[in-house]
Image (tube, rainbow, N blue to C red; front, top):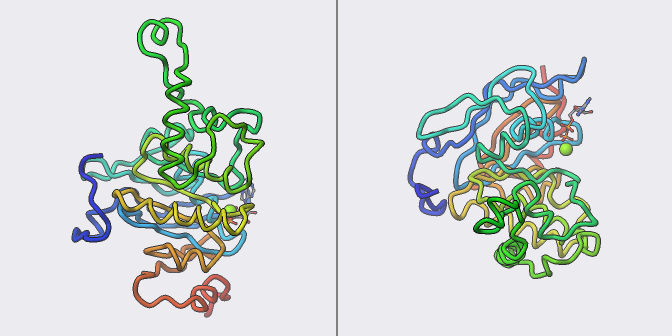
Length: 269
Ligand SMILES: Nc1ncnc2c1ncn2[C@@H]1O[C@H](COP(=O)(O)OP(=O)(O)O)[C@@H](O)[C@H]1O
Ligand SMILES: [Mg+2]
């Protein structure tokens, strides 16, 4: 994207930086209202965290943004050339085409395949010339080279030819993140990227999340770990029982205990 701006000295209004927006987005599973009327905007150059207890509706909300679940009601808008276009995603590929890449909770990588194969899954580059256009031969050399580059960029340096099953939890999570970043998407969603990752791995993944807004991308980070949320997010959307309780600006006055109490508090009448 050529019109991206850096977050640090960004003077455009929040409204102008919106890349994705939901209006009264809802999802029910039978009688369970997992997400209720959530209206939220996501802006380039920021990390928006979604905080909330287990069962608050965080994963269900982002699964609608990433095309895995169809909303029961409400609308998703993607900003294109300054105009909010209503979008109805019917698959994750649909959302990926609209620029939304997701690292899912408990990502399903193929452990018996190589790192490079997992990163490029579904988007394998073909060889140049007839070998590619006619015989559909996959350019594995390019996959390895680009995987290597990307892993290096995100702070990891294991061999992209290794099998995923040989990697540590943190390295596997890095593969999942690399898979999301390989097509340079403007919007990156990470759902609990540090679950099942060691402390060292967690630090590296968090460093990686911090880099997302630097070139004008928008990041959505879901975590129930309040320290991580306060540490990396620009804004914090607190969800409770499927509802959006509040959106806090974490660069001003955010208090951990306050967020935790908002996550748990019984509705006051
Ligand atoms: N596929 C599903 N079928 C039925 N209920 C679901 C399904 N997915 C999530 N839920 C329910 O929706 C609510 C929100 O879940 P979820 O979005 O996973 O929360 P979170 O990610 O915040 O932990 C929970 O009550 C959960 O049990
Ligand atoms: Mg979840």
